Length: 394
Image (cartoon, rainbow, N blue to C red; front, side):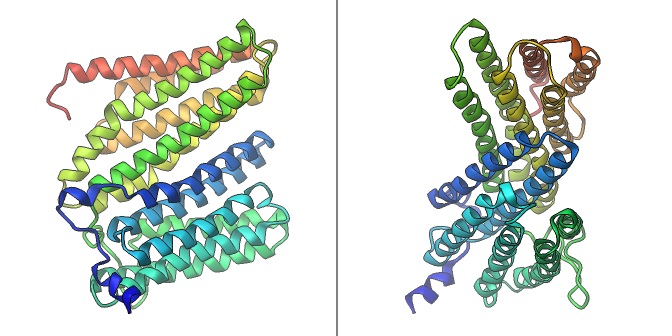
């Protein structure tokens, strides 16, 4: 009875000072995704082919989708209540199984990955149906639609896990398309209609903070890779210069996101009458591009640190320049959606990436890394100076 009674006050208290605070159990839950990001980074590092890139991208999107759906749930539900904490602990265990199966998800552990993923997605939604059934009719219908969509995509996930590895990408690609399309179409379901962003009454400040924390998780992977690789190198001027270059890139990526974009989006989503609309585009969809860019740059960091001098391999070129460009594209889209106009500094940064790609084959890995870091620094300084000239923009 005590357990059932705890759910009666399941929701976060809206419009209170504590409603936007991230609970410690949410940070504990995020530890699983630190591991998942590391696994995906290593998977891409060990297969720097187009096939490896596509597989890594699909797995990253799946991992992000599990995390962001859970973030929506903990925005509505109070993690301090025992039932919600229990739900998060169960998801953590399944998430560890999911993460450990990533390296061989397109091999012998495909079915394990699929079962863990479907369990997390459907299990969380079924929990929400139980939790809100008598308290929030609108959200109950919302999660009934979501559950139906996830059940349909789950068929493709499990089918892919059972299929031959060479055919798995097609099943899982279809499954992911269904899941990604759900929010865009309001989870339109025959007989139940569709959800609107007005139905997704969330605390915008909490959503903004959770997304920012995931960016820090991804950047932490970059720092971890740089430190671990540098520790195994012979320490000399060249290796230290490469290490310094990767660290500067991480700092610049942090500044590009947190100095302007994150704070502006935080204020906008906190002030809007329709936070669900902003959260759906800016945080649910666009942020995965930022995380992908950070992961690709982390892979380039490891390649540059391992071989800072000599000929630059194509893998180091496309991960260094491509990862930097992808991160800038993600930030550009994020800030364009928030501010209504694309930042000129990011457009210039992308142009510089294109220019660098034209003669990158003649550069050493160390010089290539230094130049991509320089591009990020230029973007950071340009954007900061531009904001100082426009104090009326938050």
